[in-house]
Image (cartoon, rainbow over all chains, first blue to last red; front, top):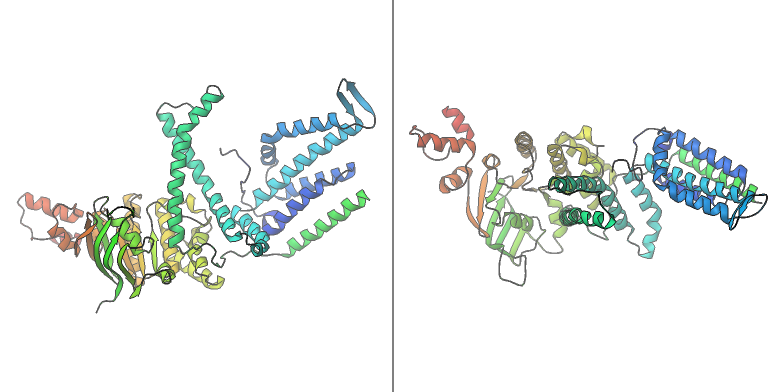
Length: 264
Length: 268
């Protein structure tokens, strides 16, 4: 379970680590959005190099990023192949029955592949360099205007923060319950799909019971600590927007201009 | 004259409101400022229920609860929240913040304390419990004793009058438990705190000024440590008193009544 990269934070002091989480969150969403407008080979190259540069700036090993891609590689390859065989145009390199590989097909497949990889890499940059709690604060800040539409933003943010806080506990508990069941002769990960699912029942039930107990305790703690849903609260942590973040916004505008110039 | 902090008059409480099976019955209790009170009794005797009533988590079905002469009602509940803090048994179920200082600040955020004041209080509280250097750590990565220190800091930051410990040290090793009890004794010397501790640990009981014994949902006895152990032979005594009783059984000539640790040291 410790091999999971999604949502993992790697402590560090790189320039990317120092950026305001609000900027990082907006940049990542913006960057992913722009990826869908890259219909030129040169643009693809620019964005791919930019992604690599940002990754290098985080000073996190490339192997960590590749580990993030690995669980999704079959999905990416499937989408890429589908794109290759469904897009036609230009020189045809291969044509047997319904399978046609054309120049445009290959290019389109390459773009799809790069788009997926860049999306995963850039999202991983966000999670690897931003503490979950800072990310929660950023989400809270960005969703704040929705309060006027009676969306319980404060509650959602607290829920998210508590959920993030309990993930390591839940993983620990899963490990403990699995060990306890193994000590009773339980074997996990063997047999056919049905047997494997059946083996999960003695794991899921105690975990569920523990989670309910934990939720009950947490409700008591929230109450004695004076938390009241819907009440105004102050915030201990402050997000600080710096000059580097403003420079980042300039970079976003430049990227936009570059994309527009290639699409005109 | 001693100042009353918490007062219960004819208190009754039941979990299942459909039946007349009360978990607290006819509770009349007055707790004074700066007292260290140990609440002892068998499992199921109503200790934790009483603690939850005193903290305002459970509302009495009958009777009244006063905090500093203010009756607990929906309107006065925020006052209880500011004045009475609770530490529960399992520290892992109590952390809300993802760092030590965030967790300590949580109750202050709910009280809408402004940030500079919050920073000051968090720093002071963490320094008081010797956890300031670990302020940026993930609380779940700390040892059991350190986790409960963070919880105590969370209460200190609130500047409460009453701290309730609901078997808060039961999951700790004897060394950490003693360290935390010493810390509490020191804090009590610095701040005018009333400490209510629900415990089964005779060593912890020995440190208190007053012991309340519960049984069958009622208060069975109330007195000083010496009085309680003299009147209730069936209770497991602190180590010094256990040794005292053993020596008497072996026909050694010792003073009658309860022997505290200090008495025993003097005697030896």
